Length: 327
Image 1 (tube, one colour):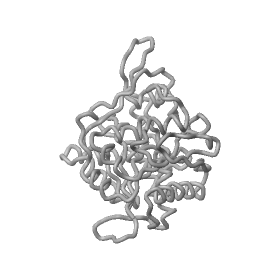
Image 2 (cartoon, helix red, strand yellow):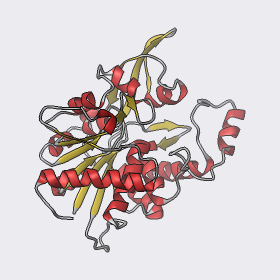
Image 3 (tube, one colour):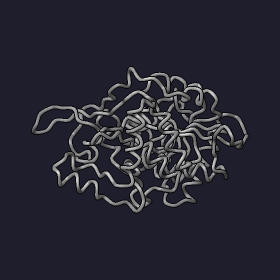
């Protein structure tokens, strides 16, 4: 069975780990590996940023580290057993920004990526090379090889201005009121090699509980990807429980684009043309969305067992809606 998962952030990475467990296999892919299941992850690159001459891809790396066993489990991002000597030394030199927590182990990944970029390799090839070390057990593709960056329009004492999403998210904790979220470069970007083919060949598509605006939303914003997905059976998992984000500050993102922070509103935002099924938490069991099959179940991914059960529920609903009992 071929499964495509557009994903970003901690929620997406943990859902993918549960999905691998639900399938009962590492779902490893590659020309020399024959498996019953194949998971292709279309990773969000809208959060990417260049700092200190290094190209940082937070969502790609979070998926890679989580599935490869190198993630800081307590945080959900960054490397385990991390140190911050390089960050401290940069601060001693007066280098800015100081708000981005660049760890020493993580920096090594970014140096490898920077060297490969300088040598002319596209992001898709670089990601594949990095995954050769981590062996995440999925095929991890960036949404595009073209540079796409999410910027946020804010207004404060400095006036109305656009800042990078990472500055708004990390430095300001999304506390600056945002009037607009812009995906710079998305309108001219092309899906990375393999993305459209993976969607075309997919049996089902699962949308994890990632941020619907700046994670899943960024992937859908690349021309051609959403259009390809609407022809597939797509089941999503709500990132909102009882009117609040499962984690993070997705509510601030939804407010910026004029969408209510509720499970039903997010499904309506994604659209019945895209979604066939939508899993909501039991707290939102009264949710109804025209044109979308809504089911309720516990959504908190509090441990490996509940995460696996959630992924299995999403997959089962997708197969049911597809009219296929294949496993």
